[in-house]
Image 1: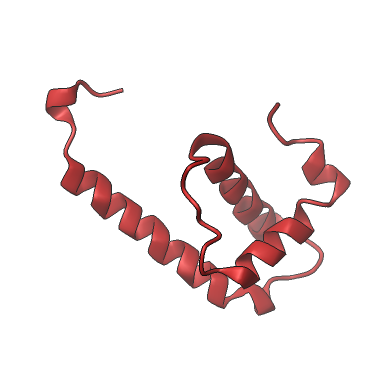
Image 2: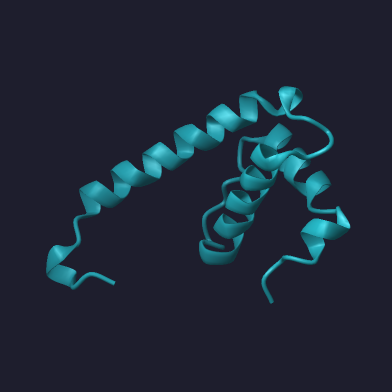
Length: 86
């Protein structure tokens, strides 16, 4: 939304690095995530779904098989299916 003159690729790259580190941290915690989702698990699923919706070209799943499996499992829940954007 910013004009081109107010965009800095270095800043964008730094933000993407932070996102990648966050995803890596989540991937290492998958075994500890509750099977019955609480608010934290719902937030994680929503954030990952948002990445798919807004940044479809960004393959956040690459190198994160445990997080990918967890996300695919939670997205099979009817409650999650009903909230997927059209």
